[in-house]
Image (cartoon, rainbow, N blue to C red):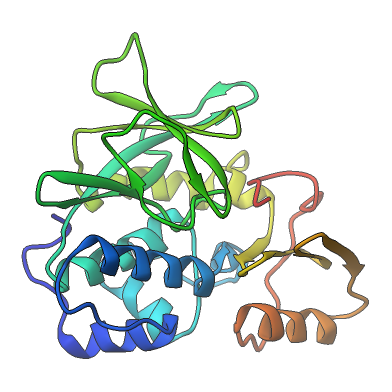
Length: 274
């Protein structure tokens, strides 16, 4: 459970309108698949507020307003709780699973990722809209077979030397691991502080914004705009601030009155979004 008090209907309706979703008649799998897909295709995975002076990152119910009212996205600490609050208000059982991201140098720190586990009757599903390479649809938590998704072939694998820990793989490579014992949003406060302030934080090393489309992916890193649409790929270097601001609005629905400060080497470092 994310919160003992669900968000009100006005917030739920605003969120559903924002992602172009229909309110499910009941908290079933069909409704969950619809909501997850619409969130993935509508809410950008981005870290702009990490590089805009004076902006705060909220993991509580204000995360819903950032998506629904401000037409923004965020990292896993924001967009997954936002969806989780909405799912709970719609009658789903939602838990937060703590994650550790697989990196070239090894597995990252505990609470380095936030994913959702949604339980429907005797079944459970891994739901993640805030990783960049996450699936479009919920993944069957109890299956250890390969699960086909528009974004690739995913598989959940038990970690042999860590009981209760599960790795998520994509295309034969590990993405992250989660512990099946739920945690609270408040438990992430120290991790959020680190990601907001540490020089070697992947969120401070790069400025990124990406969103999945029906047939591809759009990514903006600094001034570098990459668009994948089926078999077609394009790479464009935007020439001035006006072009960058226009790209945020056109491709991600984000309205900005000023640009975030771009870290040095932002294009080649930080979080992977492809």
